[in-house]
Image (cartoon, rainbow, N blue to C red; front, side, top):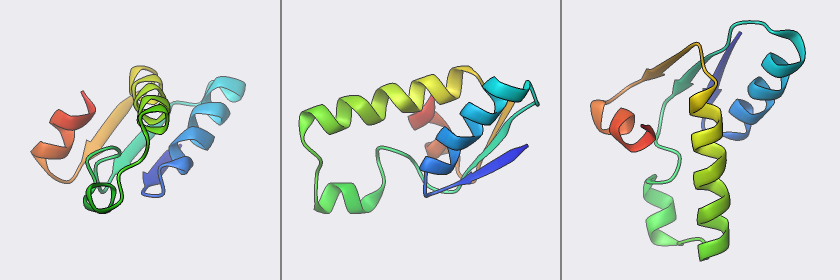
Length: 78
């Protein structure tokens, strides 16, 4: 199964399906999750950033493979 984002909620759905079915899961991050340009224009509150950071790490730790379009995106998700 492959999920692509943004929207990054697709990765949360992919994680749940992987957990329920055991199907190998791959993600395609077209843009960074937390360091995306529009969050700099309208920054989320501290609690929202903490939740997004937790979800990003949770997703990343359970993947079969990640695909990133730029090296800088990969560093931001490690």
